[in-house]
Image 1 (cartoon, rainbow, N blue to C red):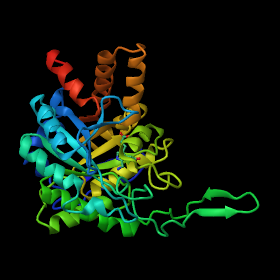
Image 2 (image 1 turned 45 degrees about the vertical axis):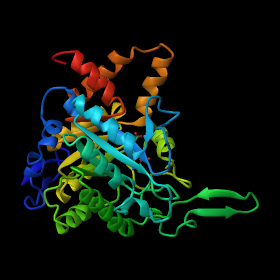
Image 3 (image 1 turned 135 degrees about the horizontal axis):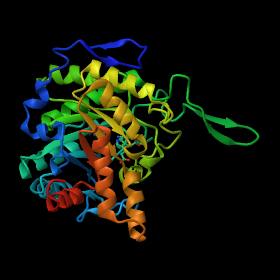
Length: 366
Ligand code: PBG
């Protein structure tokens, strides 16, 4: 099947189709239909990212750089999900913070880990809310990278005499071991599926991650469970506050070895084509505001259900300006959500989901 062209002059993208691609994966789950509906702006098109931590705590802990956002316990995340569900929010997207981080990110694929616990609790408290589980290792690794390192602790660190500067020198192939990471991501996806997630969302930017997750899900009896791929994830400065929230800033180096260079659009289209080819049911562009041209291009090229992620730094920017009285919060946030739809996004992942749902319910026909 020809699903579009990359640049006018280029090759059409060939799709292998069924069984890798099954449009019914989305249609079969009534909780996901609203997200991918092609018109309108409503609470049902919003996805609220939620952080849940395994560290014992009584009250949810605020995240300093994201006013209004907290790290939840399992019970508070379930209560929050119930409220979001009542407001008509389409879905939650879960990020886990484990008690212990290690080099292999074991907490990410522990069947009794924090996210599987949260999924079970949310499904009990709010059965009509779609639960999407982020699939990545960075919140679970002690080095903070999205996969396992080829030489943990050593690679890329060079001591230079006489200056004694520690330099980060990624190897030509990147210091994160792609092949070794794939089975771990697949195991994480299966653990989330078994806990009851409606959709899994791989965000590690490893090559082949969608294919390996698809295969693992199929083998585990989850051939109907859809994948929302973070297909276009830029190496962005706007993720700073998230890394505070999840304590996941890389300890050495940065993520440019696997996330896309902000200068690149063709590469974004290639990544999307590859993910669709591998079996992605929904694709994503992230961040939002600085990349609406990319949203437009992805939608135009592929006509695929497309999520747009307004990331932590975008949220923090608006909150900071609002706190100083420089911007009108409601108007600003509604304008950004409208722009996301105008650019071609189908659903909107935003830390403003709850407030937006309120505002949209008070503003008929929005
Ligand atoms: C990786 C992941 C990140 C975000 C979502 N998934 C962090 C990163 O790449 O550093 C960032 C989201 C945000 O900034 O709101 N698991």
